[in-house]
View (cartoon, rainbow, N blue to C red):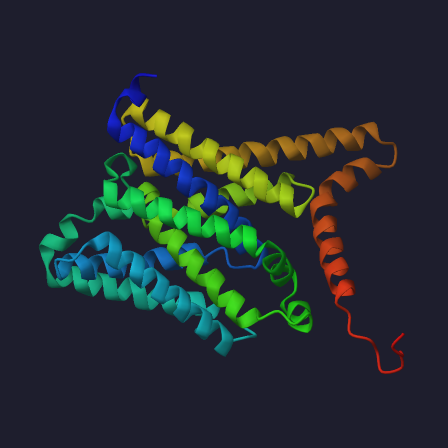
Length: 311
């Protein structure tokens, strides 16, 4: 293809592929942990770091990356303080990050004028430093998800069961938050602060609706994310539209079409079944699989009752 003859498009497709794969896998965990807004929150916190870096004449990409990790650690500690209302931590940290970014940008008007690429993304302008950072983050995130897949799986569905099994839930949750901050900060050059959650949440939202198991949901989410990013880059090149917004719209269109096709398939299955059992089974297949997986994990680590004797 003609667009792949250009070095900047080659870097864009490589960077997009790296981030799409890890961000989409991350999205499945965030959605099942009821933390879908965490990506959006960390992107606003990272914006404060970018503003501080530009104001102090440091590398904005690296300062944004560092502040995103700090924000991830902070949200984990605040979440522990509000165990019953853990979603409050997202709002608290987001307010702090966004207000700090606005104040810093107001201190120097020249800083705010150069922020359009950070707000909306400019994957075709990814430089060598950002590409190396994305590669390093992708490798670290992949190793984390592979090596910690079983503890993460158990913690995602039931933290209490994970604690009973002897897992260091607090440290594992903190490490997960740090990895989330790293991925969000690395994804910002592709889709920008305002749209970074689309790359994390939309592929996972579609995969969860279609998959019949957790592993399949992760695989489908990665495939949808990669397809959305690559098709968005191709469409952006052909139509001369902003890459980040184009990728987000394509991912949204994929989600809507996928949900529509799934509902149509369920209705068709109900018509073929006299009692409608096939349609209902298709409608709740993934939710039932998640419940059964959590139940199996709980039974595997069940603590014996007082009346039970050791064999």
